[in-house]
Image (cartoon, rainbow, N blue to C red; front, top):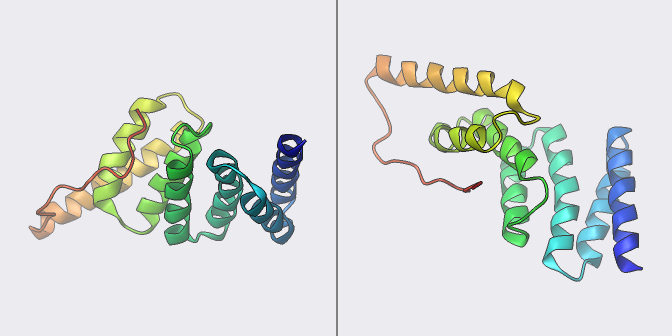
Length: 151
């Protein structure tokens, strides 16, 4: 019964999200997190919260939320969306080192994925950044650490 109730809350939360009832959706997602007895179920609630954070363009919180989902459930069912949220956040926060490592990993893991249309913009942003660094004569001294391996 609890699994059925959680699934219904999850579905209803996303219905509310897509209907732009974000406060109601957030309450449902938070309820999933608080009522869940295992980590994997909590990850589902955080996934709803991640969509709300993306919508609000709260990229710092979105990174933390995605990392929480991955920590709670390393086999999460929609890693592709988490990867896109992370790449987009890295771009918006100008976290170029992270994006330069993470984007190729995402593209290799999901070459024909739902977010493939965004790859070009992400790549072009990285290329522009590299050209700016090259023109200014500065660059990163230490290689970045890959925050998540999708493989």
